[in-house]
Length: 225
Ligand SMILES: Nc1nc2c(c(=O)[nH]1)N[C@H]1C(S)=C(S)[C@@H](COP(=O)(O)O)O[C@H]1N2
Ligand SMILES: [Mo]
Image (cartoon, rainbow, N blue to C red; front, side, top):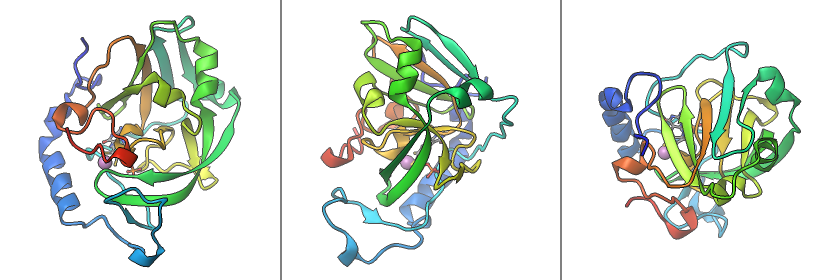
């Protein structure tokens, strides 16, 4: 089994002080700016969530700088045609516009995020998943990893996004590209995505190995294990 640590040589554990600071900030609600009055919330909001208008930045504290000419996305594992896409190849894939809601496990939700990028369905068409592929592992340039079922990855609405609201994703939010998996808590939406691996057996990612729920469905409040 693969380890949940990063592939850049420094295990995510090296950032433990940053992680502690981040968790403190989350507990104090410091990232909850622009909270919308409760009256506006309705059944689009999963239980235990609060609606925000501003988009918080949450991560392990490392924001890798990846110029387009250095950027690569590898897709491999249980696929018929593994690929390494450069920026041109990624941009040449069919582009989709999708609008969806963000639900973060730390209790903020943000409605109507318009993303542009490549639908995960279209990516899977390129590589051809093998019959025994059942899970997906994301690896990121900051060492972060997260795991999800292939069915969640492939679901309508999931995409690998380069833009938000019609403008390129900022570095803080995962630019040049990030995964967006709207049906799951936002920790599954990997920023600075570098490698997508299809596997037969599930492998817990960074937070999944540290007490977060393995599945992370906000409609079932699958927050912590
Ligand atoms: N590469 C990477 N992706 C990541 C993370 C991270 O630390 N590194 N944090 C996750 C978590 S816990 C959340 S809530 C969202 C936050 O995304 P945002 O900063 O764009 O709001 O990114 C997710 N994707
Ligand atoms: Mo998160």
